[in-house]
Length: 487
Picture 1: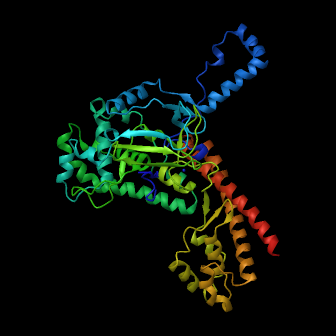
Picture 2 (picture 1 turned 30 degrees about the horizontal axis):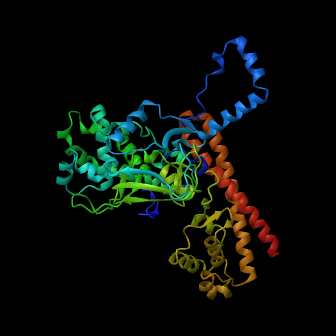
Picture 3 (picture 1 turned 60 degrees about the vertical axis):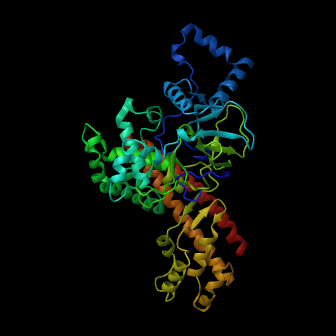
């Protein structure tokens, strides 16, 4: 207890001020529930316009704006009423959190009282959590225990979600299923035309994610067929690819990290998943700190805040110190002004700036690869990373300096010439990436006009690329000043 919050997407442990709910298809911006102006009678319209110009009108507009930013309470909606009732039956008591729609983040939770550092945000009883234990205690349990080779904990949870969703009104989990997103914006759900617009390192990982989900579906068909005795309809129509893709995204984006003992009926993959109804409505910000874990005394999963949160403000938590590429890959959103964000430079891009005629080039690349200096090379808000500059210094070593490569990896500078060359090359790479990013943003603008069905996904990539452009422009400015200082 008392460890930093670790969402399942983070093996180790997030959009910030523009989070959006994890991986959900974004709805339009939601404002206060006010009458449409067209419903006002014509003779009252002029009067209302005049009345709004005075001091009272200004106060009214400020109050209107404040409620708009704080969020619109949605606890009166039937799906949330049913969810809260369902949770109460399982021992969850909470009078401080309300589901709401927020201008910047979409759906989330607001607090009805001010929170101080050390306060418990939420305490969700074990009975409310959906884990592999839940799956084994269902009608699927016997089939999973008999199936060989054993299924993974991930597949077990996906299968349960699909089966319960198919059960509809008969499912005891229906109140929770009804508030889950109908569609996601994870890379696994993106069209190839959209994936092609991602930065190269992320594009490769996005394609891998799509292939992984496709392979999971292909390899699970026989297991799904074995469940036929449980269903009147064909398992082929129930456990189709779209259903598995939805279930996989639900598990990947919405589960908390909760380690469970290994069971023989499952494969050796770690069993670290738990779906947490209501708790999973909490959105991410990189600017807050929380602690979380399972409390053995209360038998509840609890989250404490280390930050202040005023009354009627959205309660935000941190999924981990992730950059935007990681957030998009794992959760399907990006964070505006994310302090952890960076722009990645691929090894291929790096090597374009060094002559293939360099007799020591192969040895330099081998050194960088052996010491893991061809990955995680980035530009950030503070300029090029130390790793990127180190890789550039090794690749830029003159023949007579080559023996100094170990010193460079330890942070030494072999010569002023080498240092200046590394900064100049970093500036060239940065400028090239700026031009590439600007070109992609133009492509996105064109596609948004031509491909209405991809508008939501394109807007997500546009946000990522726009953040990248700001980071690159800041890095270019820093490099310009650095080069001026070394000349």
